[in-house]
Length: 117
Image (cartoon, rainbow, N blue to C red):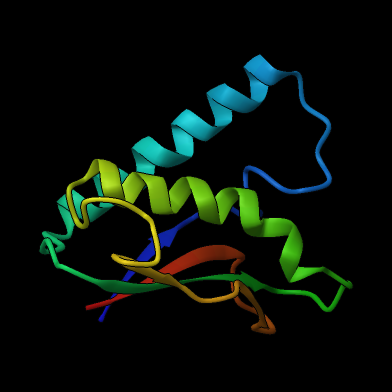
């Protein structure tokens, strides 16, 4: 298992955003590129099948909906494909587990992408 940690205090993309298509495309490209780079930097090995799960670690107890972070999760999965970890992000190659939100009092907000072969 490998955990890719992103120091983003909140997901760059969420289901409630109403962005212009060009802004959304730019943000998606950044998330994909960052995920690809982290996967290559950590020497994540190519596999025939992986399990992925995104966790948003937060430092306060405000109400949040884990479904809203799916757009960031999707872009991250595409970034793993860009890195050559799996050939595609279809169920044949990638088991995508539902995103989680974890409260860590006194911690720093971040995103963690867990990749298990």
